[in-house]
Amino acid sequence: MTTVHFPKGFLWGTATSSYQIEGAAQEDGRGESIWDRFSKTPGKVEDGTNGDVACDHYHRYRDDVALMKRLGMQAYRFSVAWPRVLPTGRGRVNPAGLDFYKRLVDALLEAGIEPFVTLYHWDLPQVLQDEGGWTQRSTAEAFTEYADVVARALGDRVKNWITHNEPWCTSLLSHEKGIHAPGLKDFRAALLASHHVLLSHGWAVPVIRAASPGAQVGITLNFSPAEAASPSAADYDAFRHYDGYFNRWFLDPLYGRHYPADMVADYVRAGHLPPEGLATLVRPGDLEAIAAPCDFLGVNYYNRAVIRSDRVPESENLPRTVHLAPPSEWTEMGWEVHADSLRRILTRLHLVYAPARLYVTENGASFSVGPDAEGRVRDDRRLAYLREHFLAARKAMEAGAPLAGYFVWSFLDNFEWDRGYSQRFGIVWVDYKTQQRIPKDSALWYRDVIAANAVEG
Image 1: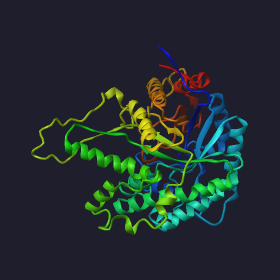
Image 2: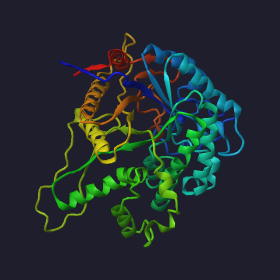
Image 3: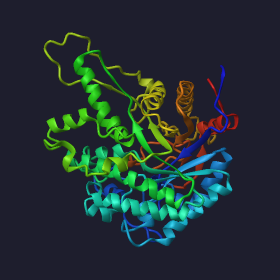
């Protein structure tokens, strides 16, 4: 084996989100979020659970930060719960909610851990959802107010800000597919939500900069690097559409390219947009606002997509196959393990969009192996997964990708949205009954990677 080194100053960390770990859902003035409502709606969460307690991080954050320090974490990406700070989405600030995040940031800094704050990781105040949520332009205005409140409170200590986590999930997964809160199945609503989320990002960027001098501001997108299942024209067109639907619809406007013209045409043809296209959705100045210059782009990567068309012209004679990984190369989420696609997406972002800096803000795998008779969690498959992906990221850096850091998802086993507690992404095992934390073998291995700033490959 050879030792693969990372550049000096490369940042190693881990990540979580508020609803997935905090608990304390009805404490200290926190308002209701769309996930409080959605998770308690029968049939929406696989195992019928919710985030009322989760990992009880709200009460255990000091111990969790101490554990991060023991594991050598240099940075921690967490999200703020909007309804904990502004219970009704706008207007009245809840001091107790802000104080929690002040204490958390102070604990991180005392431990020598750099805080990366995500402002929105899906827990919209239910009050705003009752007004239409992200389908309404007013929610983008409310988000800007919320960003200002949090940045003013934490901006003297927090220098790295992420406006949104995964706008595709906030809009399409939640409004078209109905899998996440608020659980709608309306494509036009999803497109409205996608625009208003991006608009809120663009409006928030200068607000954060004003409140947090010297701040580094970015946004995190989830990527699904796609490829056609065969060389056929039909498969290639299906790949083009999927890439536009999942990746380019968000990337292009963020980098000043407007919404992809081919996707607008597709959506008009399908009846998702009116014949005049985006004219009723995009107002003057919107696209300029969305393209506000950012300091970095966050990359969440879990798996690729191999796309085959469901339209088979009679004249099509070329091979038509779907590339599937062997059973041993799938995580328990049903996601293919394909590390090279991380290299591909990082390289593509560098060559096509030229962000000033990239961070892998989420990458990890769900495997449910628990403590053995000795109390040790031998999660060999997760360890191998992380090693492969770290090495793939280093290859992208060798090709010029400006990757500055890597956040493993997730620090703790936690509430995994519509899958409840059935999936375990954590590098730290959580016993949900006792709240005991046990670092898994992957966490101990990661500690050594961080200390060496290198991976044995």
